[in-house]
Image (cartoon, rainbow, N blue to C red; front, side, top):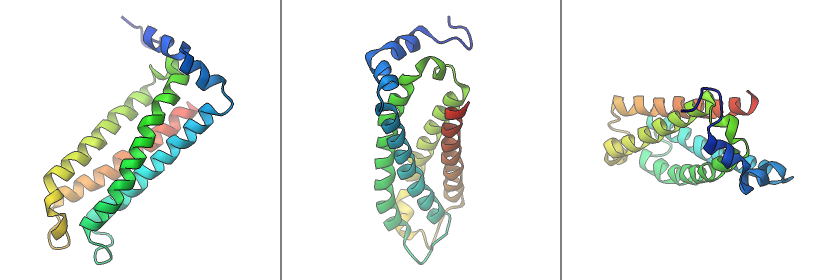
Length: 164
């Protein structure tokens, strides 16, 4: 059993792997992965926030909810792909300390919650998007507000991890 605060063996082995060493020793690997991770975060959170704000009623009359969803979801999915591909690269460089980081664990739990919220919102309310200007369910608006709060918190936790 692992002791709280001590790195698990798998994390030490991961950090000592060729990839962990390369991420730490390369002049460009970590900074490029970090930059792409931030690009992914921007492409994910920006469009999600715009879509959530639209679902909450902002911009009504300027763009219909279904069109906003079609355009913005593509950008958000691209951002998610960037972040999901680069996050493990950042992790492997410092796996021992990150494996026991309460901030990282909280970030991962909130990412799962935000993705589940997005999936449920789409599943429950997606068919109503063409009529969103006429009828926007209050629960869906609440989910959109929760989405904003979750993703902003995820971004904040990610930034805090770098400095604590």
